[in-house]
Length: 81
Image (tube, rainbow, N blue to C red):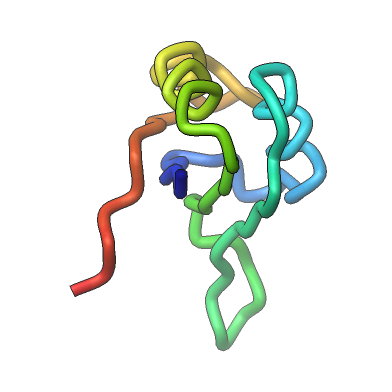
């Protein structure tokens, strides 16, 4: 399952985000989206987890929680239009 994570700290690294999700199960990929011009984080990213049940548990467990000083929004990512 692909998971959207919003309201991330601009200083958060992909390793820190991975660590937050690994407490819920295996993480296959993590990507924090960056501005093409500045290389600075846009404050959101995506986490892929191969097990849907673990992913749903992670969404429930992390949505609205504080990570690196910011209250994050976590939900299932919607496919691009």
